[in-house]
Length: 297
Image 1 (cartoon, rainbow, N blue to C red):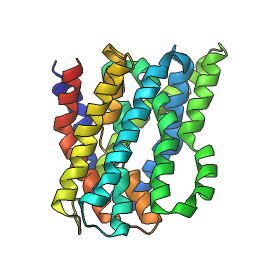
Image 2 (cartoon, rainbow, N blue to C red; image 1 turned 90 degrees about the vertical axis):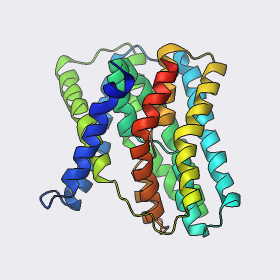
Image 3 (spheres, rainbow, N blue to C red; image 1 turned 30 degrees about the vertical axis):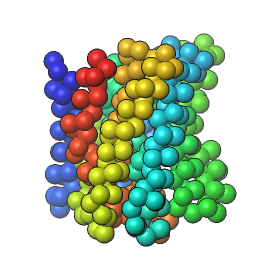
Image 4 (cartoon, one colour; image 1 turned 180 degrees about the vertical axis):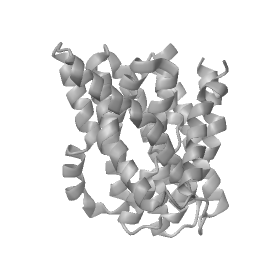
């Protein structure tokens, strides 16, 4: 089965979410609650279960982590260059800046599960735990320099970060999850993948606002082409190959997270161009992500 056909069910779930969100029975409050459920409960359960039961350690994954940090940092640098390339209001640039390096955790975990099962989920969860603080500090720092005092406590309470720490600590201690706990966490985690993709579709918005077309093309190409390209080069430089390199490409090549729009609006920046970049990137990733994975197969 080709990579494109393998990933087709995940992208069809995004389409289903987009359709359902346009129906009167599934309004904004429903999707807001669903996304909070996925983020704070279901994905946290998935991360704990995956990391606690998989043979994954930080020491054995340093090359993967270094690759993740490298392609994330490159996205930040290239995104910063947009300030000098395009004439955009500072409020718009600060909001769009994060679109060059933030990642859609929902899609990354779903694709990793599709490609490599439990091991893929565990390694992507580890990357998420490392990179979430990095991308959030960068995004909030650009939106408001004085917000870091509030950001650091929030990161310390981030459910995905805490779940990754708990799962790694449990596995490193050599404990096994009790059967009942394992079943509960596994069932919650299984529900997270489908519901997470549905919420991605529900968040899609095709309103470009005042975003210049060249800037739209720049950020979309940056996230879907340049950053995965850096991941491929950095991964090989750090000695990654096979399935580990494939996971690095997955993390780098997924589109921007819908939470980027939420952050922009909460910090009084212009959220409309961010929503459009997320939507355009998600649609384009249906083509670019299978191509990147085929290149590393």
